[in-house]
Image 1 (cartoon, rainbow, N blue to C red):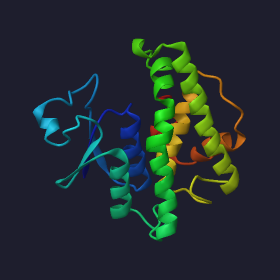
Image 2 (image 1 turned 60 degrees about the vertical axis):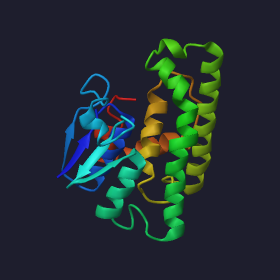
Image 3 (image 1 turned 90 degrees about the horizontal axis):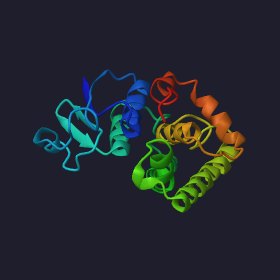
Image 4 (image 1 turned 30 degrees about the horizontal axis):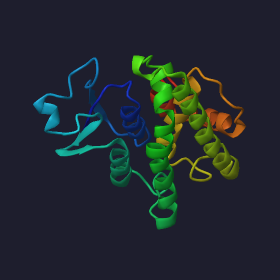
Length: 207
């Protein structure tokens, strides 16, 4: 059974939980991170020297970095529909996963810490406004993509890429800011609710 180290409120931990649900993989989760067991202790640092969650232990194979973890799980336990083997189809999935981890995450970081986490260090009005503008701009890129596919981010069927993208859309919707009218994103969000794993680990009241 796969062991997952990390608190369930972490968006990166929820990627792994949702992926396990999609693959019908049994798992055990332990609470690590802020408010729970410290990731700064030697026991955890031996597993991940970056002191970040999630970390998995799959029968002695230890891995960190959420997108690397879900790629590994899809490679080992998934099928061609979920994470395509064809180089071009797989590259499209990877492209959107990497976009979520870099461009999109960087866009929403300040606004999320300000509006949801209420971080005192993230209350500058100009930086907040710039972050909101950037966040909405990147969701607009996703809107254009979903208008093109008419379904999911990598094409006409659900793939591994929809896990990090779907959780990011949930975070955007749940954050109290002015949201532009993006009908394809709204339809996509509703489409994701056909997946029980998304309801459990995405659209569950946690941004």
